[in-house]
Image (cartoon, rainbow, N blue to C red; front, side, top):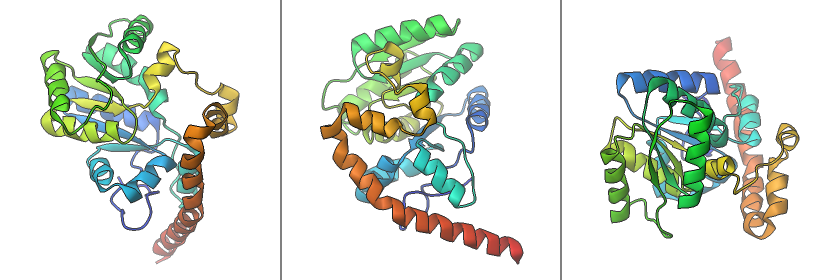
Length: 261
């Protein structure tokens, strides 16, 4: 289901497709039970900027089976367009999906971050969700190319371990590019791109406090921690907001006109 595309003109096929976490997990449960794969991307404004600049990222995003709204601006813009969605972040999906995998007896693999982070995160998630089996923990070398030979080797290692669901913690755009490649090579494997999600589980990175997140100020928290790294990124995100708001309001008007006819 197409809900709304925050990527802007020229890329209408990239859209938020998931209205809520409950709806997403219900569909993932069905796909796992049927032996079907999936690739879940979490759309935020940084992704919307990258989609305009990187045709390979755009192509990979178009091959994801599910796209959630990861970021308050995407949620607000969707509501302005008249198609409300819930905030569904990659980090917030880690525990619910691992709980689902434990219940269904599905082997899990982690790709990304570092060996230490993967080890700690696996131990903690297995302790939280009895029955969960993390059967592959792969920390690619620096400079990992999601389209290169090293990527083929990782896919083969996941297959040998009989991984059914894989968490990718590589950051955008690498994780979305690799997710699309995994799904193409192994159509029965499910992939969730989670950014720093495993670092949060392991405690090597600190997520913004709940109050800060509730106030939709997580971006301020991140900017304060890494101003040099994030200032230009957030400036680019802010720059596209006016155009996206105009587009959202225009879609809302068209939707109303369509209902009236």
